Image (cartoon, rainbow, N blue to C red; front, side):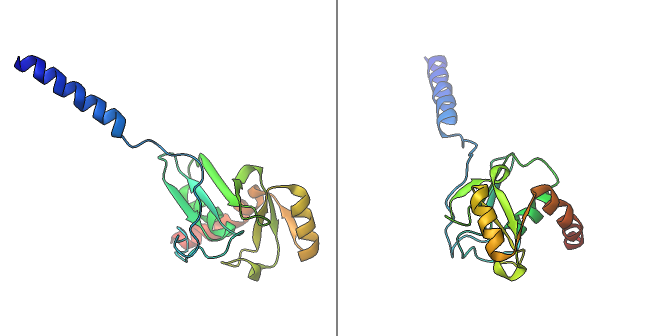
Length: 155
């Protein structure tokens, strides 16, 4: 009888562990403006259309108030970042970073003065770049240009 009770208890413990084990999360989460804090600069995320999110290999999500902060965080992690999103500057909707078109304009126009905003579609990005005298810029270029700055910040 004791053996059967032990088997049943062990089985219940296994089922409970499987059911209540934290699942690795994926995908972006809504940004709570004024409540969420940028993981890079520690400023409150306060303006829609400028920020982004990274989710690391462990499922940990970090939020950023400026695309520049997100790029610096990517460089600092120096590893694989399975998921990343930026806010579409036109709608505030989070879109995959690798599918977004990035525009670099005047530095003072973004929360942390990077001057970089993202768009879900290239046509909107080109229109914005013309209107703001900005330029379409590749993520790789931003990373290359920001890498020395990120190394200096780490010291």
